[in-house]
Amino acid sequence: MIVKVCGITNIEDARAAVDAGANALGFNFYPKSPRCISLETAQSIIAALPASILKVGVYVNEAPAGQAAQLQLDVLQVHGELTQYPSARHWKAVTVKAGFHADLLDDPQAEAFLLDAPAADRYGGTGKTFDWKLVRGFDRRIIVAGGLDASNVALAIAVAQPWGVDACSRIESAPGKKDPRKMAAFIEAALKAI
Image (tube, rainbow, N blue to C red; front, top):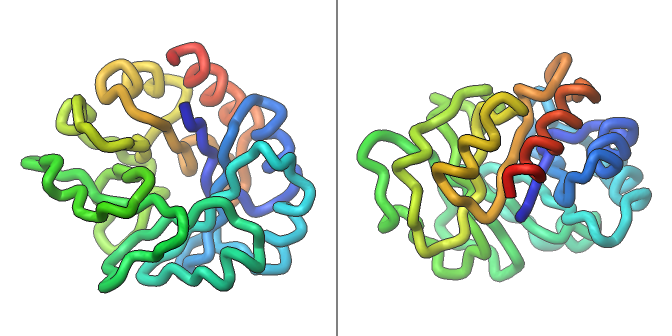
């Protein structure tokens, strides 16, 4: 199972996540996000990570394959509206609302779909959950995101039966700064629930 910590902005948080057992880290390149990271900072963090850790670049309304190659990202996580999906390995982010159904997972090239709660004009990082029962039993790989922490990740896994889980704002002490205890507790709870 993928256990991803998103919104990594510094090497200390990256190392703490890896040491706690996360196997994927997200680096946000959306300029309007409080967790947006510069290419230079991301490159220095990524260079220090073990090869076994999935490095995920988070993009909104774009999927720059050249930048992904430059940064040695493993996966592009694409949010927003794209007219053409990348041929590179990618996860498509999709908002889950009442009435959500599997037909909305419409990118045949996506390795997985990251499912998140509605966020108005924001793209994730709101700390809100969605009804996990809406996505149970899908025949595509799904990653549950939105409002996860140690208190609810085991339930999310039991209900949605996802391929992965993703946490960000609920394991922070401030936007872009992870709380080491909350982060470790989330990862431990996720790994125990598998």
